[in-house]
Length: 334
Image (cartoon, rainbow, N blue to C red; front, side, top):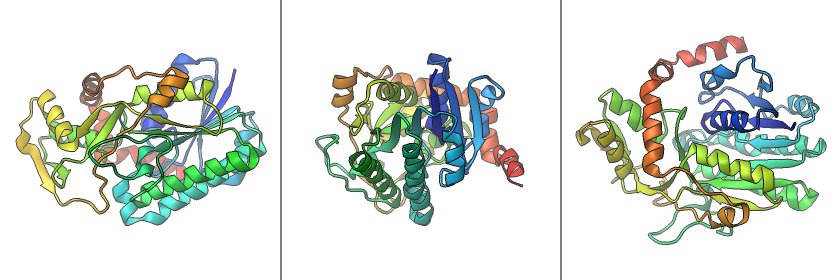
């Protein structure tokens, strides 16, 4: 049995990872620490309440005393998802991104180092590489060139993780993923925003000309890649994780509307956001070659599963829309 500490497990990718790991490694004990900020949703893991081998702790990764208490449970592996992650929010409030993504990561690294954690998986993003032209793809050796406060804060946390490996020999690994999509994603992100608005026949805002390109990765494929990194990833290495599913934002919107039998008249172009990167593309040949990981989902099959989930889980969506998912969290804080 291994003890795995997951930060940010009530969020989108973190909650999907916890379900994935529970299914495939039921003997392990999972500790989920989450501050339950706006995107942390207890509904995401409600079905695990009271289950053996799962522990939820409401807390901040910047709280050193709490981290030390948790590490004393004999944590073997840390999987660090917790982050402020929405670019638009970082433009309006960059300080909170620096505090969580940089300072919070340093606190977590130090606690894990002091307690001799066996492996530390730092979940990062392809956005730290900046923007691409029409050709090529990001590799693990592409220089970091972040263009938003969000991506700059993530690049800063990446550099801290690297420094802990180089300075202390700390067993840390960095993964950088392309755009994730799937169940339980907060509706401010592109794909759930399009889905939820289309289901309500509301206008769908698309930045600029809609031709910004992203590589889309189904969240379960991301979870299986992290599994390979936990099992066989080499400390000090970086692994890019991509779905090799490049689509423009406009293509994504049109695909969703077609599947929902909605008219493209719902698409509404709005002013572009500052520092909007034109194209991301991930070269994930290293993790495929060295760790034997391959994605299981095409963009079309992953999108169909995602749509089905949002249609079926209308109560989850309604609680997000009216803010009632926050009620219990706010009660816990008082």
